[in-house]
Image (cartoon, rainbow, N blue to C red):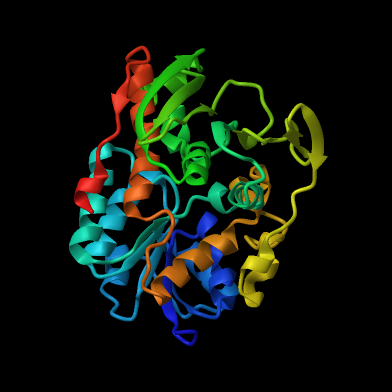
Length: 371
């Protein structure tokens, strides 16, 4: 199978352009086509990366029999519809986060995967970041001992982003903090309880009817004695950009640095030690290892805001590409697959619902019934 090539089409060329050269260099991928409604942007990117197949119409792209898989990087309101369309058209799907904006949309994607037998992967960056891989390695080799509690946060100022972000409920974009706590424990969320706190500017509230500056959610893990707490803010909350997670173990605990680019801390018993997180490019094919430490979007002069604020997403982009491509080449489930992606995404959707209802406990839907 090492010679098999997957024809990839990237849809959405803002953040999506970041992935083009990674697919171009991956030994099992063929960067076949790109899709963007804006003609000028389409041809700028196509010319820059030498991609001949170009589409302004998504439906037309899906009719192309040469496309094996689509990687969707469009605004979040489009993710579910475009994922379902692609699956129904016989294409495998990788989609940037979140999977969808409603529980019902998540269910429809999981059902479409079951009915078609195709592959879906939500491209959650944090669970392939060097920080996560560092902690995962130590947990799996027994250094941390028993997991006792997990905590994560994603705090970001979204002023200046496209208008559809304005006033978005914080937990509607929670996968960066929900993903790592569930992924490390290899668990599903069973139920959530969430509180909202503070208030954003009145013009922002009107768009989604969400008043909270911060939402903080407790997650109970299914079939486990574990729980986690995740915190999310998007507007009117003073804080340097932070995608973080802390892992409390019986032997050792990992705590994310408070200030970006400073060292994180491992506590052995009550003794703290600052640690330098290594890169994990060695886990990747040699051809794409360089992409863990360098952004490629628009060269260095105009990098995408998500890459600048997110500090390169922890070198995760080539790991995401490799996981998706290898799952297709080897006919196996990627992580996270459709069911796991739905569980992660629905934590945030239902957490906001809980916050709007004063912290009411809400059970996650049982997507295993669709497996």
